[in-house]
Picture (spheres, rainbow, N blue to C red):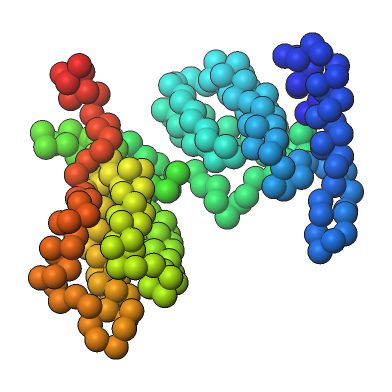
Length: 270
């Protein structure tokens, strides 16, 4: 890590300060444990240093070694420690998988094998899978399940929907919050904060082709809110007519698309 930092940082005082933070240890139950490897969990520098480390370990290696060494097109996308590599030919993907473990091993890193897969994905994946009597493969990245779809004109298109894991986790978090908030907040304040939580979910997940999952989330969140509002007292606070009026008062969010992934529509809008 320090060798990587010295490529861009010429001031030795900064690198010494970072080295001290790396050796700072971890405080657990009042006891400090010295750390010999990695960055301390919870450190303000941990995400930044991890990103710098993987830039040299993976990003530059892929752009300077893997992509030029393949026979077809190769693309790579990384966010934090999650990444997706795409290859035109299967043998390039297989060679990358074989080389990846060795590359990470040189820098004391390892693959999470339960999350690592090599799948067929693209224009011909759906037809090939159906010929084998199987479903086309999907993969999850950054909370979205990516799958092979078609445009309205019948052409291949990568589509995305909220992953089941993230969908369920978001609803459970909303339900837990509503259960606790009913004893602490007034109804009007609870409605406003519930709106902000649903709005935050839609700001991330309301993208092209994901309207169905977003509509389902808004519907489920509304029912959860109705349930816990009516448990604030023994007497039910809202029937559905009253709740709809209250939601209209706070401006309850609707599941319209916030982020358009169609490059042609974006160009026309500009």
